[in-house]
Amino acid sequence: MGWVRNELFRSCFQKVSAMTERQSVLVSEVLTPYTSEYDEKTVGWLNSADLRATFGLRQEVSLDSHRSWVKAAIDTQIWAIREPTGHHVGNVLLKINQRHRSGYFQIYIGEPRARGLGLGEKAFLAVLKAAYEKYGLHRVWLHTFPENVRAEALYQKHGFVLEGVEREALLVDGVYVSQRRWSLLVTEWRGMSGEGWQP
Image 1 (cartoon, one colour):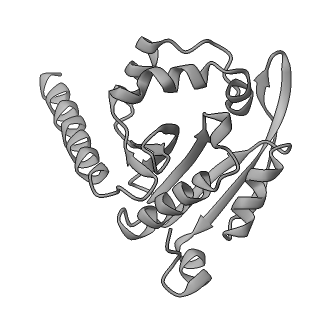
Image 2 (tube, one colour; image 1 turned 30 degrees about the horizontal axis):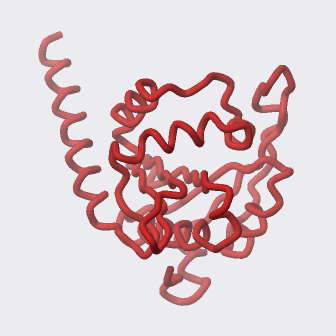
């Protein structure tokens, strides 16, 4: 069994190294690679009523549990969303499946005052561009709750296609809720404007 553990360690080390290298290549107008300096503010947001509802979180997130999750998420790219002034206002994640060349996308603006200013859209487009051009993904997909009309309008605006409804997929506060799944293929992204969008 020793060789199995060695192979697993080697594989994990290679993934961590690759992810660290990839994170350094994307720093846009509103994005910077996520580091531990953003942990406390992030945990506060994740425990807020609105984000708990958005992501269906049922348990309180502690600083230790969050840091353990970040450490274990070796297949996930995480960036902090910042205002032009440098203030941290949200986060964006892209969980990459290398085998299938797909990425699962999540984003949130944690600071209420920073919502509606276009920062989320800029971050979304920057990550989308990187997903296809830097990471070579074929498909990016995501979930929304039906009541999140603003988010769905944004994704439709940029070409995402509704794949279907996952009926009563999540149990939230004792109630089963449905969620919608959307995706965008690299061919569709390229077709939007020839070479893709400029965030």
